Length: 396
Ligand code: PLP
Image (tube, rainbow, N blue to C red):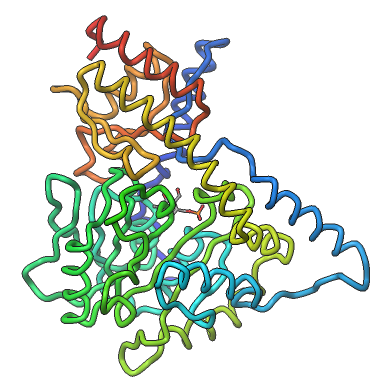
């Protein structure tokens, strides 16, 4: 009798970023003392903002006294935080009710956990290149994966064939930096409604959108509340990668097979989690205050300036790229005939720059390489200078 989940045998042995870390560590050991510029993994470098730090300190202090101490938190999230998130949507004329908001420990956790709501026979439709965790989580579950066609601008196109599926959309996208236009979302929503599919909309990078006409939430589009779940995170918005807090919106109007997905998720959360820590939720609440919002906007300016400087350097070097404008990622085309791991090696060995090879985001990412603008300002400027030199010296 088989007792283990054998689907784990089908998941690629190492996770992309673990692979990169290993290669960089090996190279560093052989070349000690080199100053490596890390533009690989999309981890933030700016600290938490003052409002968040103040709220975290206060929450820790509250936990020190019997009168203010908090034990278990509500499984679906602290009511004040759920309300603050709902109001933050409502301020932008997006009708989200607090009962539709679930506080989470981050988007990654949610993208894994949410699969529990769906039958394993439902295929996952994942635009590729994509954040690797989408496919891996589905492979672990034994789900079939379908790759929709992509436009030249890395926007996914709904298939002609009507397939009921779990549809992944990420905007701004990791790794390509592409953003879904209103038209693109309208097409997917129409497709999801017609096929009774469910869209999992990854809004982890929504705060990097600068263009007014680009939707920051899938619910800006009519019909989305009947077919889409939005999963978001404070990781990139407010520097919470190591602090861990996010939120998921499951509309009450979303039903499949006569079941309310919102009610199912309440049932799931009240069974499978005891909620996010009180301290972290207090910190997260501060992000949604007026001062907190002002501070995160300043935080984004740092990363936006990085993107601006890096795009200028790539242009000076005559290299093509996508992203950067509404996204903290710059997706550079590898100069012919080099593959993405070859460019990775040249960057590491000749310029001590770490980037993420496009091939790690799926076969169609080959020929591209991703740079993260979450690095610190001087590192990004220096990386730009070194790339211009590499080009002048004809390394690629
Ligand atoms: N979604 C995308 C597209 C990401 O790139 C990441 C992290 O890099 C996540 C989700 C995970 O975010 P979190 O830190 O909230 O787990």
